[in-house]
Length: 365
Image (cartoon, rainbow, N blue to C red; front, side, top):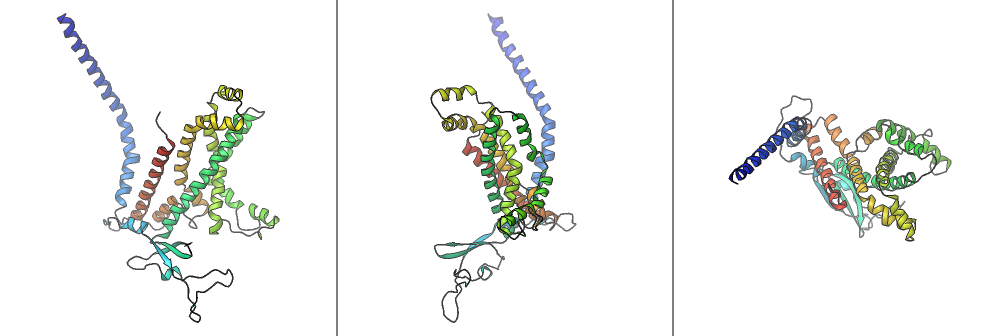
C-alpha cells in the first residue's frame, strides 16, 4: 500500500515534467514567429508612434525635435462658428441672392479664427434658419476622414445587398452555374490599379468618355462633365468603381455561407407552408449571420484603408485617410506629421473593428 502511494507522486511528477518540457518546446517553436512579428509589425508600429510626437523629416538631415502633441493638435483642431447675415448698407436688410433667392451670409474667412492657429473651411450648413461654418486647422485631413467614412458606409451597403443577391442566385441549380460563378470573380481578380485606370478612362471629361457619351445621348449633359474633378460627382464615381470591383468578394463569402446551410431545412419550411420570403427571413438570414458578420468586418476595415483607388483616380484632388498620410510623407516630407495622421487612422479603424465585432456578435466560437 505504501509503495503504491509513493508511486503516484512519482508518476505525477514525471507527467508534470513532461508537460513542462512540451510547453518549453512549444515556446521555442513559436519564438521565430514572435521575432518575425516584432520585426515586421511591432517595431515599425512603435516607430510610427514615436515619430508622431516629433517634427521628424523624411530623407533629411535636419535635426529632429520632440514636439509632444503638436502634430495631433494641428490635425484634430476644429471649430464651429455661426455665420452672420450679409447686411446691405443702403437698406439695412439682409442681402438676397438675385439668382437663387436665398439669403446671403458673410464669408467664412471673416469668421474663422486666424490666431493662434488659422482655421480653414471644411463645410457650411443651415440649421433652424441660421448658417454655420465648420472649420479645421487641417481641413484636408478632416475632409479625408469624412469622405472615407461616407465612402465606406455607402460601398458596404451596396456591396452587401448586391453580393447577397448574387450569392442567392448562384446558390440555386441552373445550367451554366459553374461558368457564372467563375465569371463573377473577374472584376475582383483584376488588379485595382488596372480596374481604376479603366474606370478613369470611362469617366474622362470629354465626349470620348463612356459615361459622357451615354449622358449626352440621353440629353442629360453636354458630354463634357468632369466626373472625377467635380466635388459633387467625385465620391459617387469612386463608390461605383469600388462596388463593381469588390461586390464579387462579398458574393463569394456569402455563397460559401449559403452552401453549408442544409437543404433539409428549406424542405421542412416548405412543408410547413413557408413561402420564399419566409424561408429567407427564418432560415437563410439567421444561419448566414456569422458569415455575413465576418464579411462585413473584412470589407469595412478594407474600405477604411482604401488608398490605391483614390491615389490612381483622384491623386491630390480628393484624399482618403491613407492617401492623405501618403502625400504628407512623400510630397511634404513631414514624417512626424504623417505618422500622427497614421496613428489617428489606426485608432479609427480599431474603433470600427471593436464596434463591429461587439455589435454583430462575432466570437471565436
